[in-house]
Image (cartoon, rainbow, N blue to C red):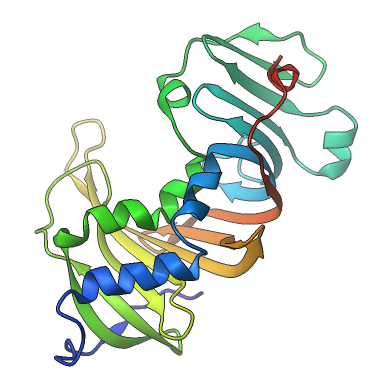
Length: 252
């Protein structure tokens, strides 16, 4: 999906009194309901990722992950399937208060505890489109009405908050397909300070494409992120399954 500023029409007065809540409710339903977002606590995912930085440098990586949050996570990354099958891979594993990494045929070495893994409750991909969480913050947004995004009719939400100087991205706008109500794009803003230099304004755009039904809930299988127009991540989900539990031996 190409970059561009969507054109949004004024709010239609015929819409519900709480158009933001109504839109987010429809979007959550389109993804299969709120329970479909809780599935991201435990599962197995395989995807390709080209990102800056990447587990294998500035190249596309093939990544396999097992996650059983809180506290258990394992990532296996290689430059391609052949390397993965041949054991030419890097592994990071967190299991409660124990953590280790291993590269290719080198022996494993211990890693310091990772608070993000210890306290995380769901896979990091869910952070990108966790609509139930956005619903709890609905009062921070206004309904921007109908518009067009790359030739598709969309509904838009816009933040009420003034832009502040923060290192954490602040969601400014979100766009949903008018027919399916699936999330298509989010746009965020942050002000980063690098080594005491002048603040750098960062406009981040995340696009959600090729949504598919996975076990009764929709999942965007292709996610692209840019910062100031430069691609910083490009993820294709190849396989995904959600579980109630993963064997402890997987994380040993």
